[in-house]
Image (cartoon, rainbow, N blue to C red; front, side, top):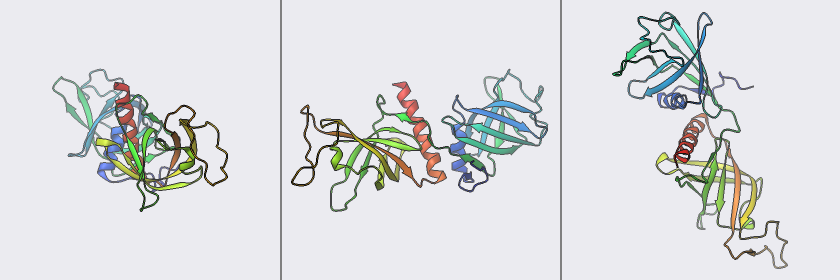
Length: 267
């Protein structure tokens, strides 16, 4: 069982906590707030301000209350509130804050404002939601240079999650690392979203086109040669797991996965 007190999951840097709070603005997030009297309500997080280090929230069943005149839920009378949330994709986020303040918007609505917590537990579960790049306008790439004396191997990113990544390369299966191999220092480029350098453990490699669908027999003169059945150039898929990502890298990567998926949905 994952322990929220494990240092691996605890975030204390304001920029990391803001990223975690940003995850909770997704409409599919589920956020419960409990007070000292064990009363519990469902809430929405509206946004977070990195300059003031404050975030804005209100009950999910907001009825237009200004909170100051009508605070039936006791949100301004409690002293400490405990947030227990499941973000988009299954990440567990837990933290506590002191009594919030009220902020009014130009449209007449109101929200609650709290300072960033001193610490926040972001518990990363494996097998996370995977964003597909098949129909996305985003063009993400990767490169790997196993031998400094040779040209790097280029890949396109087919799909990605915090757990792993699917890559495509214009090479035959026999020219790529086999299952179980570790690809060190793979550079993943997500365009304007940023870059990540990571080690990958290959889990499967299979042909996509331009080569036999079965494993080729070894030739008498050594390595098997690529033979195209259709006249197309070879294309192969590499499925791999991320190795040794720390909590900060996982947090950042989850943001990238979410943004890539949102971009794909708009296209």
